Image (tube, rainbow, N blue to C red; front, top):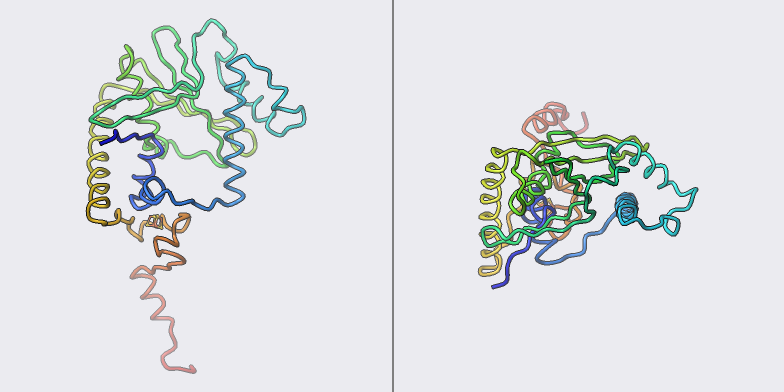
Length: 259
Ligand code: SF4
């Protein structure tokens, strides 16, 4: 049996909705992407490309015209992130690491990994229209997995590792959120991973051996409206009403037809 390979994207999708994980990663259904979302993805991937070129010391002229709107975003990020220009700080861009843990290969890609004194700094570039709240970022599997894999595959203790998101918004304002890792958080990540992997492996074996689909998310969680798999999932244009909605509708109905 081949090793299950997971990234933070797999874990986030499974946490969001197990059925969505099935469609995306097992059935490999193509998810339609709106032009707005595609533009957002392109913006993010071009920024990553630029930052990688820069770290490799390659010229940006071929991929960045002076009047390219991306230049303002790139310049804003360079001005905001400290130590980027300090050549004495050792660093690696787009560094990939894999940790085999509990029979699963966990893969991460660090946009930039810097070593400053006795500390390891993980930097991640993000582009969002509106930056997410800190508590949402903290729950994201990327925030858990990236420091975890570094601590498990290096000599750095969890307390020596930080993870910082550098987020450029729609108006090229740069926001940052830093998470200091710790031994306690490391233990918590292990527990969360164990729980998620158990649920995922069970869903996968029931699907493969009995044809039982992965569980859908509870419709009341309102995660389906923006899901690209509404059609195969038969949750298309589904409208749900809470008991309060029903009461309100019943009390506003006319007492008899024609009233
Ligand atoms: S439509 Fe809802 S239940 Fe179905 S895959 Fe998407 S999020 Fe999950």
